Length: 159
Image 1 (tube, rainbow, N blue to C red):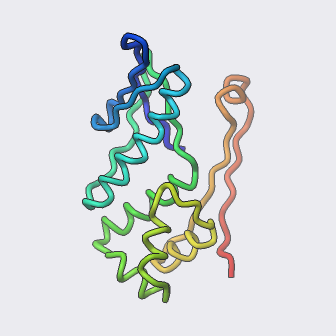
Image 2: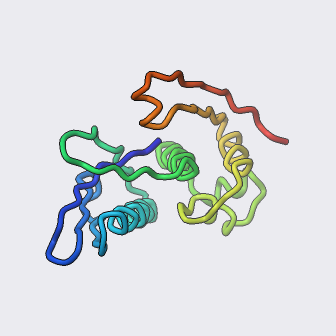
Image 3: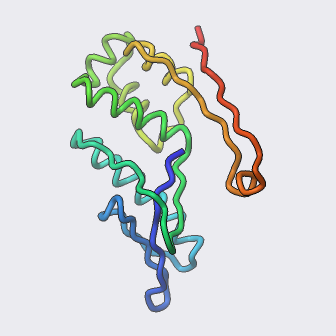
């Protein structure tokens, strides 16, 4: 789970959010809640920009002190893992499309953080790179504070 720390502070009539890990991901909101939702979108936009330039995506830093947290959806995390694997291996989108026998726009959508891709498509992409997806299921913060257990499930490829 990608949890990016965010500093939210009041700035006059509105709230301002800044991410120490992604400095260009700054945003405002009329309320603290709106500001945090806008921060999630700003972090996603910033990551999309970095991806378009084939730049490594900074991992979230450790959350310390007075920070709020923006949690990216699990689907975003899987897409970022695919992007990083492709970047490290020097694999272009066109080559992944060739390996999967897909069209280029399908690969673009697969890597688009705002597109609701099917999980089976991500599984196929990872398999084309000789990898499997493993899912880690754990409790939310409230559950973790009560000392509940976590579960790891090994993903199986879908036909």
